[in-house]
Length: 179
Image (cartoon, rainbow, N blue to C red):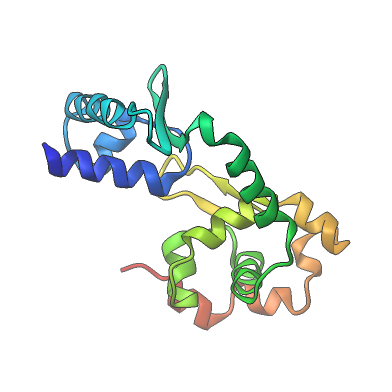
């Protein structure tokens, strides 16, 4: 059970959003009741007064969040993260999402060759990228937002330089093709 709890904890951490126990069970290919029992143990783990994170739940959704006691420092960090200029890796990721989106995280990472989790989260916090749930696939897709278009002064992504050629380029299509 401890391995299952560790796996649940990891999924909640990387998701960064509320998840249903049914979805966690599906990903881990275990019974939902086992996931719920694991979540109950995680609640106990994070109930300690000195924990920097807590496990919230409403109805059937669960999410790891920062502790309310650390609200001010968390807000200060987030404000600093989203107010600065975009880094080169963030710009590269945003460019790939702009030209190839909607795109899954594994596809994005295949093209860039590096883990993009934190970069995607930062771009989402800035309102430049949005996540779309796909009911036919376990993986969400990412695409540029209206805010991003507004910031660039564009009416659509098709107005980006060489968009038509790059959006369906043979190398990009081959790199994101799943077997």
